[in-house]
View 1 (cartoon, rainbow, N blue to C red):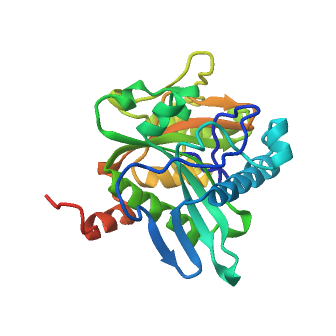
View 2 (view 1 turned 45 degrees about the vertical axis):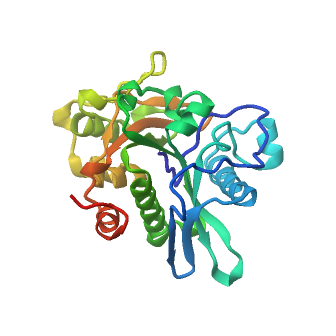
Length: 292
């Protein structure tokens, strides 16, 4: 789930070549995501070219804009890619202004079948997420999210979230999760917001991820009484602040990702707790959804 300025990425697999073909979801039939607002459109990737454009955008944001360290093959191809890309769904925002049709925003969406094909969810590299996977409810891992620098404004982000809302309804997703990031690798630089998250938004024990042994970084870097809520929220990355607005929780412990030059936290969102206008709108207007 990681937007970073804006962006999230995943596991880097050296010498994994950019994908040429994606696997289509088995269900449901028809367009899962389809929205248009002016020149902007949000939909799922349909072709290898779509995914290539998303990978190129990710490379520009993560490696050229944020200082992540690419493999040699990634640097040559100027693409960000890993083993998950051929199995997951790629949510795209496309700008049709001037007839160009450029991909200007993306989110990577991983459900259980895609994770099973790879062997695990991306977040499992950093967090013990077994509690999130109990039962048969459908879960969705959000990741590799980024937006082109020239499009980092409200309409683009709104379309991404509206697209996720449609996807959640189409697959009856009960729980969303993923990693969101703070820039840099010094936890002390983010002591205030990290402490605020720990004291105020820690996930309930039955669904609480925990940073894996050897990578666990204590988030309670300041005493609770020293945390000013307003100051902490002002210091919070925009994406994490946005997740908090829809009732998100965080896992126990942060993780330093030296390759991507970030400090990660695990975000958990129960979709039946979401009160945001996009999910509510589509719950009311989706003609295929039974209202109980």
